[in-house]
Amino acid sequence: MPHTVPSAIDHLAALTGYRDRDLLDVTLAHALMDLLAPLGVAVYKLAGEEQGDQRWLLRARIDAGQPTAVSDPPWVAFETLPARESLPHHDASLRRQAVVELGPSPDGQAPQTTTVFPLVAEGEGLGVIEVRSAQRLTAGMKRTVCSILRIYRNFHGLLDYSERDTLTGLLNRKTFDEAFLKTAHQGSGVAATGDGDRRHDDAGLSKHWLGVVDIDHFKHVNDRFGHLIGDEVLLLVARILRSTFRFHDRLYRFGGEEFVVLLRCPQEADAALAFERLRANMEAYTFPQVGRVTASIGFTEVRPGDAPSAAFERADRAVYHAKQNGRNQVCNHEALVRSGVLAPAGKVGDVELF
Image (cartoon, rainbow, N blue to C red; front, side, top):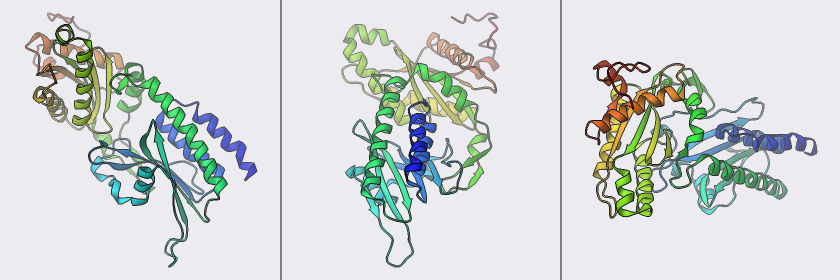
């Protein structure tokens, strides 16, 4: 095994050099393959709400002789993922935060050994690492894997610190441009499936939509109830956002009372329905001490070759229109342009933009 150590160290150096979570998981899988030379390595993460339905998302899998990792498509339907309880040994490893080993079966149906390592950060169970090998891993190998996972966990925490809003835990503004260009311009094509096959990603036929959510009269909340209550409102709005949208939709806090949503769905009507559901969920929620809090929402379709600033400006114009016309409503930029209420982006005409 000594000759594999330099390669593994190279992967660990790369592990702490990436700022992309997808590449982080792939690099982790490659490092373990080089270090252990097993039959295969897989990285699974939990998707879904902690107190609700949770499922296993395959982030990276490499089998012996396979040059690159495969994974679930980035926009995979949540209901198609394996339920948490369907992989009991993975679940047990994560719940106990301990290594779980499955030896070869006596009947020879499972001749290999599977070792499952928990992936934990900040006390939260993120997922597991599955290592399949012809023989049982030695105690030294297991200690080495655990040491690598500590490096991964520490770097994962640093990424969270730099990429997430400290109050709400949502993604912050500085991560928006890169994610916008990466996810919004993913067209249809071939995607990896959980079983290692390749298939066409039907979700690639969908479109991307950018929504801007602005809390109505938030300054009044701070002035009347104080900033501590105002922060609590922001935390609860973030919770409503998480419960309204899907696990792979990207949710951002842009500062103050402004939030941004980047989602994927087939039609304009689907996007409108998703944002209307958010508006209704906020209106129906009783905020402690404050009571009723509403939001004005504007959204736009992300166009081929769109710049993040251009898409954001269109959605922001729709928000401005919503606020000028009663608040607590969802406005679609393209619909406003079609109806003549707004001029096309970049043209002022008779409409006051700001």
